[in-house]
Amino acid sequence: LEHPTFFEFLFGMGMLAFSQAEAEYVILETGLGGRLDATSATEDPEVCVITSIGLDHMEYLGDTVEQIAGEKAGIIRPGVPVFYAQSAEESDRVIEKTAAQQGSSCKKIGKDAYEILGIEDKHIAFSCTNAYYGTTTWKLNNIGSYQPGNALLAMEVMQYLFREKGHVDRWRKALAQVKWQGRMEEILPSVYVDGAHNVSAIDAFVKSVPETAEGNIFLFSAVKDKEYEEMIAHLCDSVPAEFYVVTLIDGERATDAELLGKLFEKYTDRPVVVIESVQKALEYVLEHQEKRTVYCLGSLYLTGMVKETIERMRKEKADESRRRKN
Image (cartoon, rainbow, N blue to C red):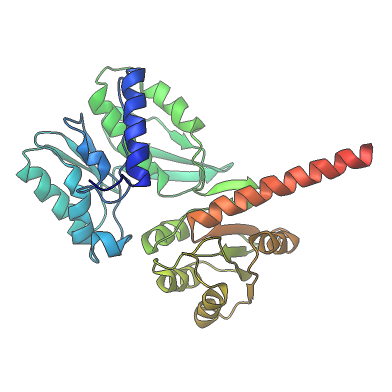
């Protein structure tokens, strides 16, 4: 046998740790796809859950949503209930068909299953159309318009697993406290990082950007194996911007910043600034922020680097302050 991959090695370690801890429930998220993923080595799951499906990792999973859905639906096991988030009709059909073939019940969480009531104080409020949840108003500590759908999917699974009544109030309090790093996460006043790194994620992102009178600034980077030109075109076409800053993330997979800059110039008439250093690019947008909102997106690697840079800048500022006092 070949040596386990990094993910497989960590997965094995995790399963051993869960076993030793005698965990009652374990949530296993696939690393890539589902059908051939290491997590599919587990037997007799309680429930199978499939979140929204878009075009990503196409070199491994296929270049159509049907093919990708087929790989994702590979986690479905005979007789095990399936819960999934409504995506495209093509992918929905694949999931429904696979569940039927496996003799599994299948519940779709449709986009009409909830209503977004508004965004206030950087929280998004929504209600559910299912009578089970009554007239409860749910709040999430996030402004991503896609998060209510994710939350409701999780709630439906929890409702299936824990059928007792009287827990809605506990769920409401728990959801209001959830913080999801890298998804419309505010890391400084009016500075957000979002890990949108494919076309469907960019689409979800642009639907979550509120209208602001002061304008937006975008800091962007991407890796080579993503559909970055389509991502850029959609971003430029969908959200108004004062200007764009393009930077270079670490690693061999990074897309050349000059190339990304030329693509932005192709799709927008707004100013485009190319600064290869992430720290200098971040300093530039902060210096020019004024009352504008800054969004850093295009890669999870960029999200991590921006957050690390800010922590480093904070530490340097604190060290300098201590030196002056001494």
